Image (cartoon, rainbow, N blue to C red; front, side):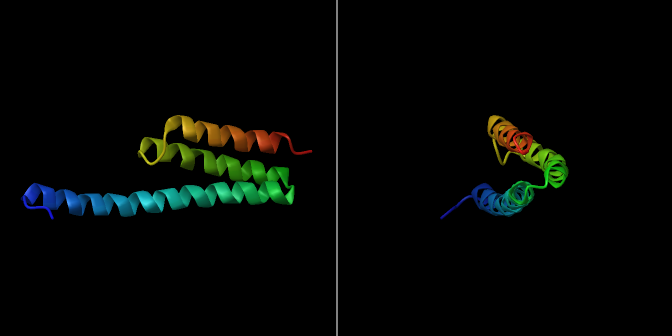
Length: 87
């Protein structure tokens, strides 16, 4: 258990940040899922629109520190490649 005031404050701060980060990751997953659902239905236009909405959200996760820059770039690249491969 934390003894100093600063350690107790860090516990509170970390709990708040964890909640915010959890919500942000969930939001990113939702946007990615919408892109994948559009790809699964075969609707290329809807998939493009969903990707255009998801890309800034994924990259915002990088600036906020919930994911690594290369991980986000790889995710966007693979989604766009899957959309491009659609007939």
